[in-house]
Length: 368
Image 1: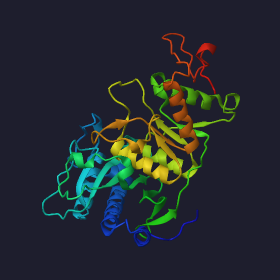
Image 2 (image 1 turned 45 degrees about the vertical axis):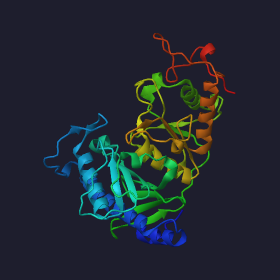
Image 3 (image 1 turned 120 degrees about the vertical axis):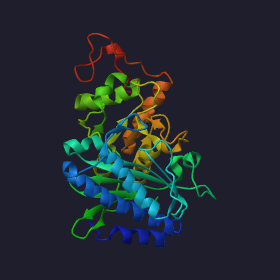
Image 4 (image 1 turned 135 degrees about the vertical axis):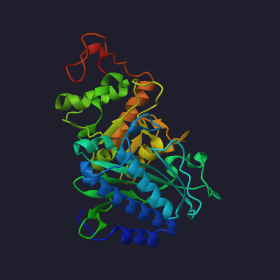
C-alpha cells in the first residue's frame, strides 16, 4: 500500500476517535514507546562507534549472555515509560522480577512487558535487530503491580508491537484493530504510516526454522519440513525457500509483508524447556500482530494467546505465520498425537535426513 503521510501521533489520535476502548493513557504509552524506540535506533545505528562506558557483558535471568546494548536499551525503555506515568508495572527479559517504579512517578492503568533488544547477537554482524512489547490492562485497583498481575493470557493484550532497527527504522503496532507499519523519516524526525492494515497471504512458499535442530524435532515438524524440502517432487507440488535471520522481529516482519511461516517448535534438545521463546514478551505480542493481519499463531497443539502464563519468563513452542500453513501443522500434530502417523526414527549411524537423502520407505510419513 502507498504511504498515507499520516504520522504516528496522528494515527493514534484517529484511532482514539473511532474506538472508545482506546483511552488517553494507552495513546500516551504508545507515544512513550515511540520515543524510546527513536533513542534506541540512534544507539544501534552507531554500532561499534557507541561507547558503552562501564557496562560489561553479563548473564541475564535466562542464562543468556547479556550484551551492553541489551542493558542500555532496557534502561531506555524503562526510563521513557516510567516517566510517562501511564503504567503501574513493567517487566523485561533483562530483569528477573518486575521493575519497581520510583515513588515520585505517577501510576497509570497499564502493564508493559518487553524485550528491549531482540536478536542483539546480530549487532556485531550488522543484521537487523529490534524491540518487542506487549501491553496489558492492570487488574482493577492495582497501583503497584506484582508478578501475578502480569500473568494474563495473550487474548487480554490491548496493544502489541515491535520496532525494527535495520536499513529503515520501523514500528509495527496493533491496538486490536488491524496491524499497521510505520517508517521513521529521519528528515522529519517522526514515524510515518507506510503500511496500513497489513495482510498476510494465506499460503506461502517460505519457511523459517533453525535447521541445526532437525534431529530434535517432533515427527509433525519433521514431516512438514520434509514436504517443503521435497518441493515440486513431493506431496505439496511446489518449491519452498528457507529463511533464517535469528531475530524473531525480522522474521515476523517478513511474514507480515510477504507471507511465510516461522517456527521454533517443541523439541527434545532441552527436555525441561517447553520451547525456546518467551510467551509473554515474544510469542504473545507476535501472535497478536500476526492474527490481526489474518495469520495464525500456535504451539502446534493450542493457540498461543490462549495459554494462561505461569511465569513472566515462561517459554513456549511457536509456529506462526500464514494461516493455511499454521493450520496444516496443527493438523499434523493432532494426527500424530492420535497415533495416526508413523514415528520418524533417526538412527545413530548412516543418518539419512531431509538434507542428505530420504528416510527409508517404512519411515516416510503419511501424506494424507
